[in-house]
Image 1 (cartoon, one colour):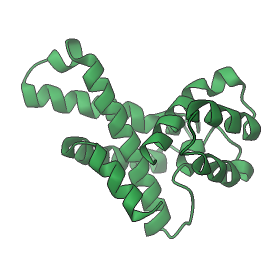
Image 2 (spheres, helix red, strand yellow):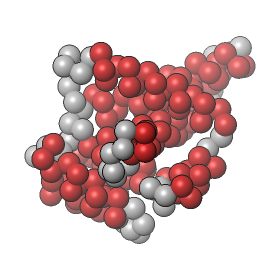
Image 3 (cartoon, helix red, strand yellow):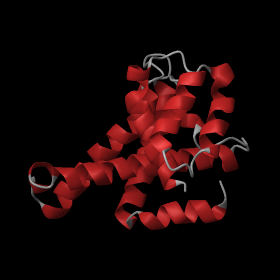
Amino acid sequence: MTAVQFVTVLRRTGADVLFLALGVTLVTSLIKKTARGRLPAKAFVFLPFLLGVLFCAAYRMLSTWSVLPVTGELSSTLESGFSCGSVATLYYAVYEQFIRGDNTSPVLPLLEGIVPEEKRKEAADALYAERGADDLPARVTEILLLYSDLSEEELSAPAALIAQFLYLLR
């Protein structure tokens, strides 16, 4: 990922989402280190998005002193939470890529629990190469079916998450 792509993704989201995503990244990393053997690998794919929704809902309720963000504005809160999870995943990928020196695709962390480890790097590279495709969700599903042992039905939710993440990287 180039610096320009990273800045573009960050510019598309609000400052509150960026700060919340940093917290989500830290909490996700902590959970990965402490509960690695106790949670299935698939849980770590959805964890940043779940935490993003929870963090955004809590932040919005505290900032308005109301439950309205969870009751009346739920779709907006879920959208911000999903964006927060996407940015948190991006933060983690950038951390892996630049801080630890791993020259990997930013999609790689999303494939844990979906694609076997021996095929993960190849699948991540293939997905990252398709980020500009017009029919991105269909291409993501197609590529995941090639590299994963899961059925198309089992891949529907992870494929949607990965397609949304790749859309942010355009």
